[in-house]
Length: 249
Image (cartoon, rainbow, N blue to C red; front, side, top):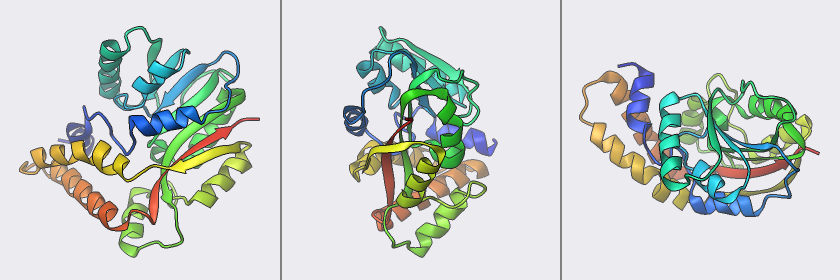
């Protein structure tokens, strides 16, 4: 089994593949400024549709759900078909920094907990021309939220971000967004329950299910997940997931 297959075995089919909740998605939706006329909604890095379902239930616009993983997109379509069959949702297999979409075609880009996979600078710069004037980006990302950076957490996250630069902090990410051309509308930090109740509850069960596997790639993912949960248990508060809402003037 490859490392990618091991990751898919443990994370595939989870309702959420990162911290977040319906409540936080709805909170972010309630804070959106008025969107421009026309234009589709893109849910970038949508995974199995943890946020897509709420977007489809709330926004009366075409929604493009995009992810690199075909299996996740198939699960998403099945979930949408069961829960929001009337919604106009299509899928698009692509990386969020190489979407292949038309410029000036989107009114809203949504991305919960996935920007780190390509790095925030790559994502924000690639998305800018795709948005209509007045278009909005709403995304959550992991970042430092205090001046305190415990060494075990910093070492762990530096390894996670290897090849993508250092994990950002709130001020650095805002400076980046402004330099690209966005303006800040608002931001908020996800609550601790979005980690433990909404994400780790399902992931922990899956980790225990695979804990006895002798496959080295499975064991690597299991060990990584356990280390991550230990880091979060001890040091959450020095880092967190922050939901940013940015506007293209």
